[in-house]
Amino acid sequence: MIYKNKAFRITMNVIMVLLTLCCILPFILLIASSFSSEADLTKYGYSFIPRGFTLAAYKYIWAIKENILRAYGMSFLITGIGTVINLVMTLLFAYPLSRKDLPGRKWISFFLFFTMLFNGGFVPTYLIYSNVFHITDTLAAMIVPYLLMNAFYVIMMRTYIMTNVPMEVIEASMIDGANEFQNLARIVVPMSKPIIGTIGLMSAIAYWNNWTNGIYFIQSRRNLYGIQNYLNSVISNVAFLQTHSVGSGIVTADLPSISIRMALAVIAIIPVLVAYPFFQKSFVAGITVGSVKG
Image 1 (cartoon, rainbow, N blue to C red):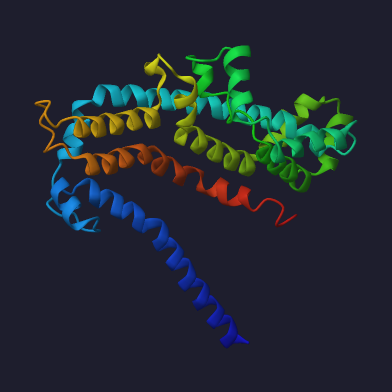
Image 2: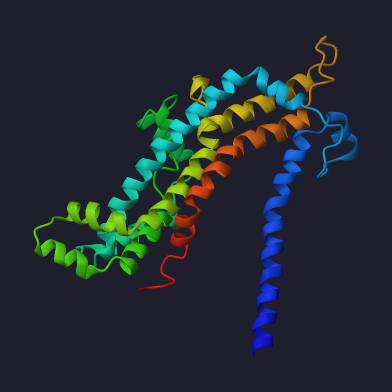
């Protein structure tokens, strides 16, 4: 029995090491490529050790640092506002659904599940946001569509509250004169910090990585671009210069297009890498929602 347990642990450790390498190696390759010369990347391809070490890609980025910092600021603003609103709406939806005495609970749950299976489609959704709500070229266009509410987050939050917040505590609080909002603020929220941290992290990453809203809804006010949209426009501009440089007198032979993509990707993921360790404990505790009850 001891031998079998030891073999199982060794096997699982090997599997976890391999999975860890699968997560880490792409980042190493990304960083190494951002410091490689354009000629070596074109000739030899990607390598875990930089070939022809150069800072050309980062020098190009440094030249447009003001725009990058502005885009960073917009991304932090969009991510912060969107995540907070997402968490508030998720809590206000999930807490009533966790109460078995809620009138019409089954019908409300049905409509929630229905949105996970069906939606209006891209074109009708775009027309509603653009022609009815008129959010085109506004900050709301970067926050509201597709990201402000997620039925899966509501289900996660509801399940966590049902399995980890004792109903007896809420009933005792109501006997003492507390109302539902007081129960939510003083009992449910403090006892649900792991799942709140988990959903908050997932929502923040979704907002940070989102670039489709900028493509769809931002037409003229490019100053509303977040870091993802701005970096995408930089890549497009570099590709345009290289494509149309022949016969135009523009010198782009030394323009590091491949390494610029890698360097821009490094810049885009730095905030996520910095923030994740602070949320790791809550993320691990929240993602195992319902696995242990006690």
